Amino acid sequence: MTKAKTMGKPAKPVTLVLTADEAADLLAPVGAGGQQGFQQQLIAQLQAGSLTMAFDDDQLGKLIRYMTQYGPGGFQGRLRKAFRRSLLELLAA
Image (tube, rainbow, N blue to C red; front, side, top):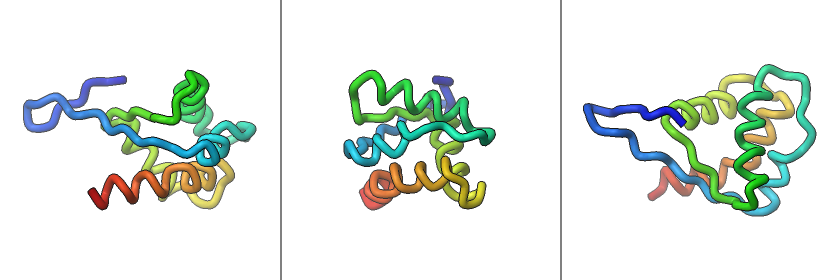
């Protein structure tokens, strides 16, 4: 992960915890879109056996962009299904 800085301080990584069903959505077969590299990063974290996903600022931005700005593709839908709950919980805190 890259080390982003915010106002001279290192950015704090964001950690999201998925349910087993949400993780299964991300482990679904990879399509032929342009986000395979990002999906492979997510899959690598899940294959380590944990449902906790860590994101630096760049990765969190990418996650949110893929969820909201790239239309109704299969990968985008799986991201929304997998991360909607945990992002809403993070924002509510």
